[in-house]
Image (cartoon, rainbow, N blue to C red; front, side, top):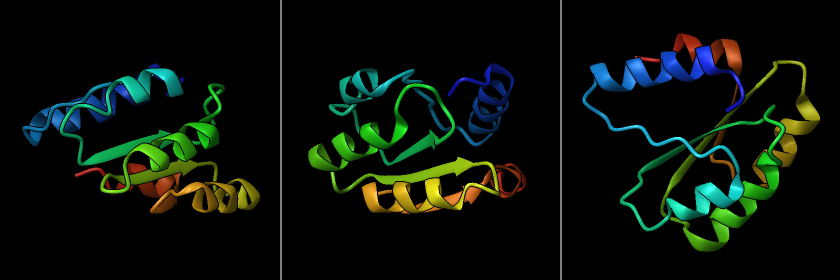
Length: 101
């Protein structure tokens, strides 16, 4: 996730819910977290760190983790790529933000 302010907002919401957040800045770091008991992975599909490739690697390693991606609402092709890579749900950033607990 490249947007640090959004990352802080997400972390604060998780803290209020009593949920631990771990941040992976690229696919390699994400794979390093796969040994942990992850239940949800949130992916910024607009990140510069090749998020589609990271989702594909994640799905090869773990099929039991829910993957939610967010992106600009006009990026329908990127949304389709994310779903094809294994993203369970793709939301426009505005919807994702509104649905944060």
